[in-house]
Amino acid sequence: MVLIRCGYFSQSSLLIGGLVLAEIRNCPSCGEFFNYTGIRDVCYKCSQKEEEMYQIVYRFLRKRENRAATVDRIVEATGVDKELLFKWVRKGRLHPAVFPNLGYPCDNCGRLTKKGKLCESCVTELKSDLRTFEAAKEFRESIEKSERLTYLADKEKNKK
Ligand SMILES: [Zn+2]
Ligand SMILES: [Zn+2]
Image (cartoon, rainbow, N blue to C red; front, side, top):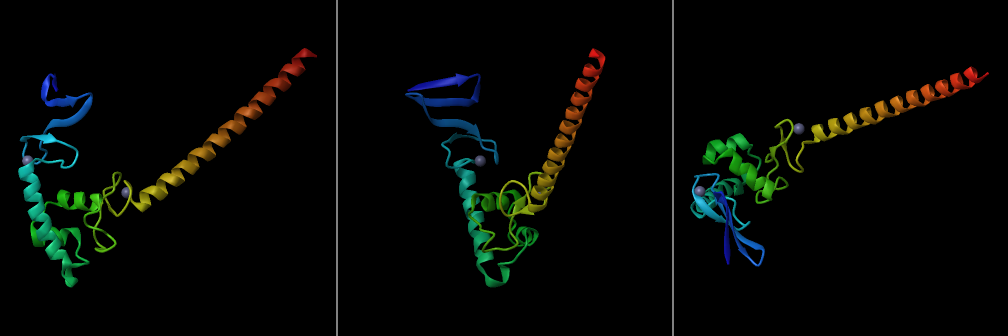
């Protein structure tokens, strides 16, 4: 076992035969050091707290009348942190198929989305941007082609 330190304690990793078993990280929630193993992204204490919160949120959402609750309503009713709620939706612990008003912010515009990194309207926009780009490229190429032809034609003319 070799403990490699790369200057910062938070970046040291426990290596066994080149395999990273544990990494010391700062808990993003409380700032404490913890062993990151890839399973939890916060420390043990915080993950316990998150678990309790999850149970509260889940109990709330399980009620038929709360199924369609919006993110704001859930936050208001349970006191859960919005980011935590988004994390559960991203990880698939809370499924938008079951809770129709759940989602997480689009990477581009922040509107709620249910899948991928971008919402549908951003994906559509991106696609049309791409089409415009392709069209512009074709236009440029056709101009270049005609310019080349003119150039060749001029060259021919000069020969005579
Ligand atoms: Zn923590
Ligand atoms: Zn978007």
